[in-house]
Structure formats: C-alpha cells, structure tokens
Length: 276
Ligand code: C2E
Ligand code: CA
Ligand code: CA
Ligand code: CA
Image 1 (cartoon, protein in one colour):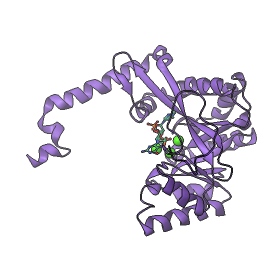
Image 2 (tube, rainbow, N blue to C red):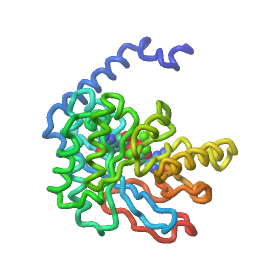
Image 3 (cartoon, rainbow, N blue to C red):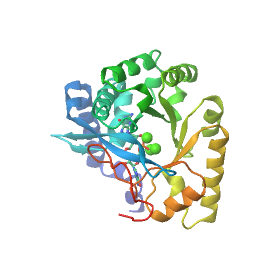
C-alpha cells in the first residue's frame, strides 16, 4: 500500500505504465513530424532592470497546444525533442517566430532565447543562429541567449567557441538556472557570461530564511566578481523584489513582475510601489 503511493506505483498498476509509454510514444510521433511545429507559439515574460524599473528583455517561452494532446508543457516536450535529435529544427522555428515578433518592438527591448543543451555543441551553430536572426530583421545586439550547464557537457570546447562567436556578433550570453546543481562554479570560471540567471529555487525562501538570504547575497557577489550581471528568477512578491534589489541584484523576472503572455510585455512603470 505504502509503495503504491511512491514511485513504485507504475510497477503495481501496469496499465499506468502503459499509459505513460503511450503518451511518450505519441509525443515522439508528433515531434517527428515537423509540420506540427506550426502549432507552436511563443509567450514572452518580462525581465526588468532594478535600477530603471523598465523591461529590458522578454524571455521567449515555447507553448504547444496540439489538437490530440492538448497543452503540452515545454519541460515535457523539449527533452523529448532533444533525445530525438529534433531540437535544432524545433528551436529554429521558435527562434524565427520570436525574432520576427520582436523585430517590430522598440529597439531597447530585447529577446532572451533558450538554447538547448545539444545545439550549442554543434559546430557552426552560431552561424546558423545568426542567419536566423538576420533574416528576421532584428539586430543581434537585441538577442540574449540563455544556456544551462548541461548545454556544455556534450562538447565544452565547441560550445565555448560557438558562444564566443555569438558574443562577437553582439549577442548577450546568459547562464540559466545557476545554483540549481551540477558544476556551476567551474562554468563560471571557464566561460564568459554577460548575465547569470539565479535559479528560482534560490529566491523562494528569502523572506523567511536568513541562510537563504546569505546564500543569494554570496552568489550575487560571486557573479559580479566574474563581471556578469545577475537576474533573480521566480520573483513572486514585492518583498522578494525589495530584498534582491537591496542585495545589489541587477534584474528580476517572475510572476510579480509579469507572467509569460502572448505579445510584447509591459515596458515598466510603477511596480515597486503598486503590486498587482
Ligand atoms: P526556464 O528557462 O528556467 O524558464 C523559466 C520558467 O519559470 C518558465 O516555465 C516560466 O513560466 C517559469 N516562471 C517564471 N516566473 C515564475 C515565478 O514567479 N514562479 C514560478 N513558479 N515559475 C515562474 P515554462 O515556460 O514552463 O518553461 C519551462 C522550461 O522549458 C524553461 O525553463 C526552459 O528550460 C524550457 N523552455 C521553454 N521554452 C523553450 C524554448 O523555446 N527552447 C528551449 N530549448 N527550451 C525552452
Ligand atoms: Ca530560461
Ligand atoms: Ca531559468
Ligand atoms: Ca528551469
């Protein structure tokens, strides 16, 4: 009985396992047909500068509503696309869409785009990405690429070279989900980042826990010491916003500042004083 509530649940109820397998197989099937990528859209979530209170970047987040599956979260389909070797193609569609939309926005509002673990380790990926940006009619200076630590595991030296090319073209490079585990500090040592995004889990407890505040403060200082600016993720309350600002954090992102939504995000305003 106790087992049935834990992970063993799928071993006991075989039909459950079957359902999971079928979902996965179905997901693979619709991901292998790239005509389905046309069903995808991107939402944008504001990244706000804490000095000026204005939105400086909008993070593009993939959304997929499939007629058969309904809404599929990116946390579910991106890893499957990676395993199928379809991620470069899929992310290309998403980047083209995001860059096209953003090309009509004010020039001081940039787009922050998630690169996948695998594509940045492909030789020549920077040239391909810059080509996509150029054909969307947006300046590379308005694009920030977010990469996670796992992105480098495949081939660090190629990833490093490709990221350097993107930087030379004017793109910003951000280390995503910093502090969520893995070998974070060595990446900070070996690669140059313009921006470090502090994982949302680091923000969660700062109102209540002195230790959490100390850890976040230490990480902000560490990032600054490498020359990078910091974004605090998952800022959900005014109190958290005030705390990270007092710690010297540069940017903030989270539901308090704006949820992911279709279209250009709000450019800024009275957030510090009037919570929504
Ligand atoms: P991520 O890059 O860490 O993106 C931030 C996630 O946190 C988003 O979830 C966003 O909706 C969520 N979030 C933002 N503010 C808050 C908050 O205040 N509280 C909480 N609890 N959550 C917040 P989403 O959109 O479901 O994306 C999940 C992940 O999927 C992303 O994590 C990213 O790794 C991946 N992803 C999304 N779009 C793309 C894409 O176009 N390409 C690639 N390669 N990966 C993508
Ligand atoms: Ca991200
Ligand atoms: Ca993140
Ligand atoms: Ca994440």
